[in-house]
Image 1 (cartoon, rainbow, N blue to C red):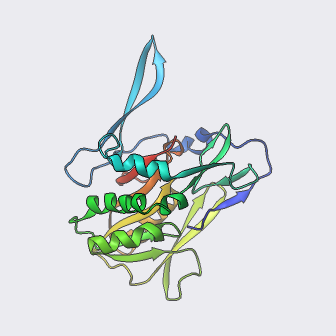
Image 2: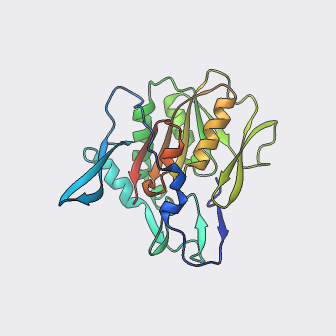
Image 3: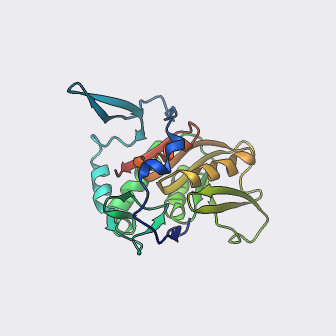
Amino acid sequence: MYVYKCISIYSPPSPSLSSLSDHHNRRLPCVPLSESNPVVHLRQTRKRRGSFVVSLSATMSACKDQDPRIHGIKTKIRVVPNFPKPVFVFCACLLMVGMAGIMFQDITTLLLDPKAFKDTIDLFVERYKGKNISVVAGIEARGFIFGPPIALAIGAKFVPLRKPRKLPGEVISEEYILEYGRDCLEMHVGAVEPGDRALVVDDLIATGGTLCAAMNLLERVGAEVVECACVIELPDLKGRDRLNGKPLYILVEYH
């Protein structure tokens, strides 16, 4: 994806998060990549007669309470309020929309810290090493930052999934719908072969449209998508619910 994908909307304050995801209100099951149990999060949904009613979600993520690297990674991700400007810009790939407006998740500060950057890559490598993954597919543009070092470490090839007219050879394309229009991902014909076991990598999952397009593209050429991996998840945008049950592994969440 580009640095950000956005369209200017001169309108009243941004729509509520729930209105973006009303048609994605069913949480689909997630199957762990290995036999180890996923981290189970308790989320407060409402109060009833003085007691809390909670929902369980099998969110596969690094062990936030056990691995000190996770805290270090999260502290290096800068949150920039009201970026990009004007505040009525809706940016689907790196934002949180709330009462204060857009909250941009800036990973460039993570890249400035060699230890935090290495810890990020190491956590992914530890998860996927020995899982017989033959291709790591990185989504433009930040998937190009995290995907190649993961691919090298686990002995897989790296395949870039690019925006239209960026690849010089024959391509296969997958168009998808976003909140503000349409977009497209392309991949070189022959880069991925039938039977390949693929890992899809991006920096962040928001509404999930781009990850879905990436999975469709890979599956159309006969690859098996093993899992999707992102550094950041914005759970309030319910992008996970759009993945048709495909496992999603993330390192940090921002609510």
